Image (cartoon, rainbow, N blue to C red; front, side, top):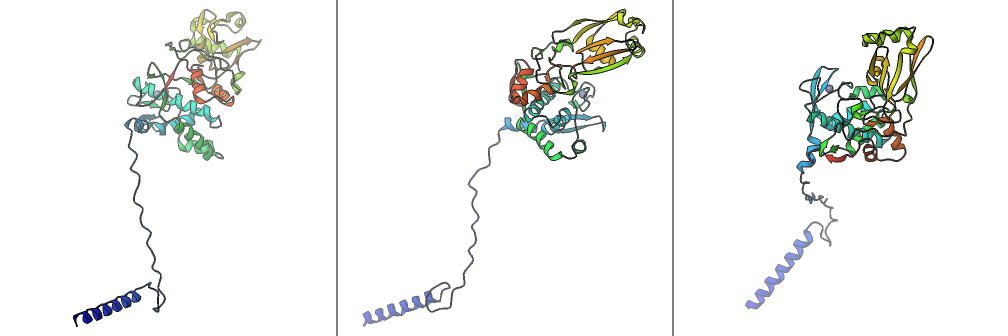
Length: 344
Ligand SMILES: [Zn+2]
């Protein structure tokens, strides 16, 4: 009898299981159509760990500079690469070729790091650099950029940012230190040895040919009346004692450097360096000749600026010829190496 009860119990149990299964949602059979249950998308577990931070690499982007803004008469601290965007925008036409703009970014960054290493801006205590182009480097604010590039703002801004970011942290070195990376608008054909213009002779600032300049400064002239010329020169050099009537016999170029720039000039009773004459008369370049007519003194100049280091116009010319920014820099700065901020 016990076997019969056990069998009955098993049958009842099995029927109960079948009924329960048929009543479950989604079970097929005679029950009502199942309601689809929305399945939740599982949140994927993170499979990558954060990129480990290289301290040396971040020092590129963490480097800050104290900039004296002459227009606001205050020192503002900003990221070096942010400062670079304003400097590059202020120093070269954004219409220049990208490789030339990149060369400018590296030159301006190197000049900045050099200045910081040597005590900062000489005119503004407490500042690393200033926005006065006659002291440190030009700087164009965002408002000025929008004003200067009304049609092409986004494009030009992208060129400047790309040039700065593609070379972020990159500087030129000599003997393992950032160089005094001087640059100028246009050389007129040859750049100049640094000691022919400034006090110091640097092995990396030597005169080199700059063959691809196409700017308007290759042939400029500035005219003075005889009287005006005599007045300017006698004021700056009283011992010159020039007279308007005898000017043609009293002034002469005495010597020139191999670049063609005037080394010294006779001005009546005295001699003056070509760079000083350039400054006194407001000439664009010390690469000049002159002629005296019955009424005037006419100066013909080639190039624009001091002529030392990179010619910006020549850099653009080289970029058009297919040179990379490093080829451009290595041409204008003799014997340099490259390094990254924090890694030299
Ligand atoms: Zn300064």
